[in-house]
Length: 120
Image (tube, rainbow, N blue to C red; front, side, top):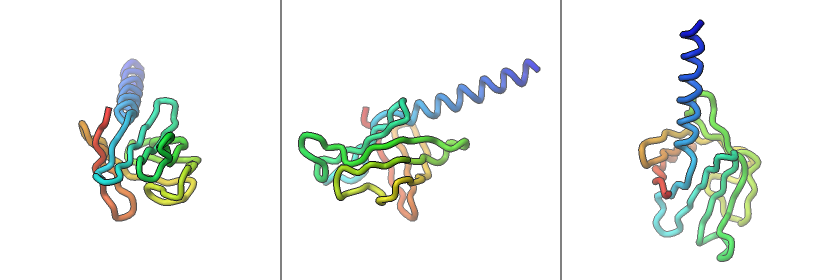
């Protein structure tokens, strides 16, 4: 019984730690019109872009996020777009395959693979 409880707390700590390592600001590899995604602890996210966003408010997208149980897929839900530009597509929900490295977030969407760099 003690082993089961210890294993549960260990798995909970690993899951929480992985979720925390995802949180923060990440910068896309695009040099000219860079996107930034900010993943907040509250379960909200924002995507910024200076080229396509408003100069006073560069947020081009916002919504909610969640990780699947395997921590390999990031789902962006209730996506709200502030401009005609969107980072992946215009659907209200999108699932991105992810891998977190030390300072990089690898995002795979359809056949596109990008490495976003930690920016905080």
